[in-house]
Amino acid sequence: MATNRDQSYSDEKGRKRWRGNDEIADQIKRMGDYLIICGYDESHAKQYGRVAYTISRYPESVVQLHQEGRLNKIPGVGTTIAGIVGEFLKTGTCAKMEQWVHRIPKSVLELTAIPGLGAKTIRVLSRKYKIRSLRDLKKALDEDKLQDIKGIGKKTLDTMRRYVSEHA
Image 1 (tube, rainbow, N blue to C red):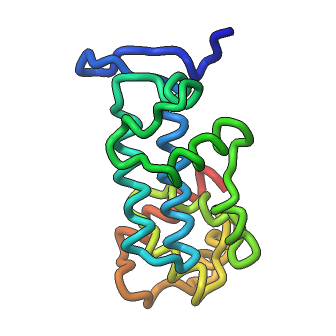
Image 2 (image 1 turned 45 degrees about the horizontal axis):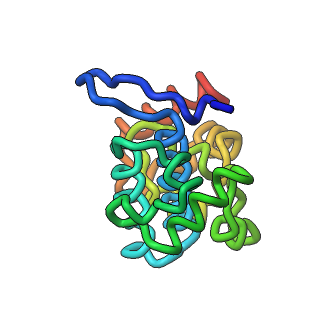
């Protein structure tokens, strides 16, 4: 039985893409961001972003490759990533992410949608200012607590305010 994940489409350049690949790639990228925010070794966590990009552009369905036990055909996908992909397909999450939830709630990932706000900056906001959701960010912005953070200038603050006013 075909699911939405099994559906292909053509991107803006006419390349065949797969909805399931996009979904899994997004989950793997978010996991990499989450691990960086939580303090996981950044050089290792950044690999998830690269693998996510490769998966999103892969010309075959990740769902099909998983069912056939052929995920290792994808460059950068070894036993660990194949296991994570399988967990995401089955449960929507994975054990590696769940190991870190006791440190920082997954709601911190809401902040990754803000343009110009990367995982390292979110890590600073989370650790130093206890900002772990859009609601926390809104409160900090309303109280002008973020004015003097290194790396966050007026443009970024304006972008955050605009995003929070539309989404929080």
